[in-house]
Length: 100
Image (cartoon, rainbow, N blue to C red):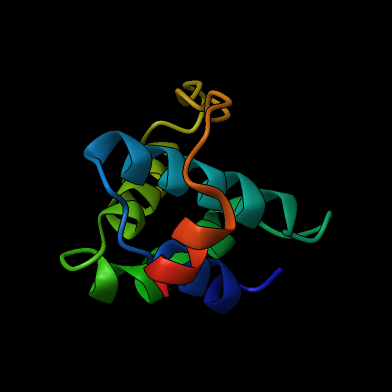
């Protein structure tokens, strides 16, 4: 999966800072899962950060994504605090339509 697609999906208007954190973490996991098996992580993470950095100030989920990339580059052997969102109702199709 390309970084452009991940960034597009991260550029949403989350309702809370917690939701922005969840979306940023999901974006990181999606980006990481889309890397080719033989890719150099450091190179790909640097490239992803440079692509995402211009949107960091305007999109909180992108800021979380960038933060995760930075932490993984600076301390590569430290585990990242990643979690899937807790299941809960978020408004369904009506909320998705209103968010566009």
